[in-house]
Image 1: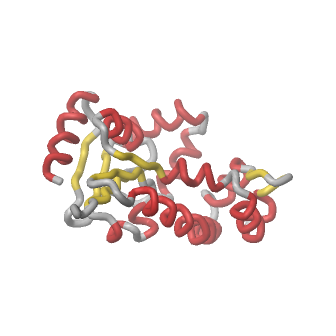
Image 2: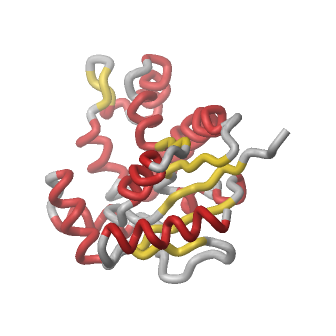
Amino acid sequence: MKQSKKIAVTGGIGSGKSLVLSNLKKWGYAVFSCDEIYAELCTEEEFLRGLARLFPFAVKEGALDRATLSSVVFSDSGAREKLNGYTHPLVMERLFARMEGFPLSFAEVPLLFESGYEKDFDGVIVVLREKKARVEAVKRRSGLTEEEVLKRMDSQFGYGSLPEGCFALSNDGTEEELCGRLKEIVASL
């Protein structure tokens, strides 16, 4: 039986990870998203009960108050570590279960290096994009202020120098250029 390869796609907020996954999906590859798994978990009572034990103010009437939780975790690194310590293992457990059985699959993992899961993948693609373009992209899609976006960026891995063995994928040109380089990376896998 052929061994399956699990590839992480990561990068800072607004770098274009979703665009990369969208193209991979279009090309017929199995793709998964940690953000989607997290959103799924946020609808489950057991998960919300656990979250409420850690952050009682963040769960109101059985639903997550994302804005309140975000305002706390992006201004308090201890709270962010506590949240990540609870959510990341649950998200990653589901992710790896879903990736099983595919010869080559890709997963969007926003906080890969921050959470130390890079060693659990057979390869890592890091999407890189100029900071100003990232800020504008996040402001457009989320309605956050520039200050809020920068706070989130400051809480993430620096991406100034990449760990050995990562594939760097620039998203500073056209989508066509991005796809051309992505095809080269996929072919080398």
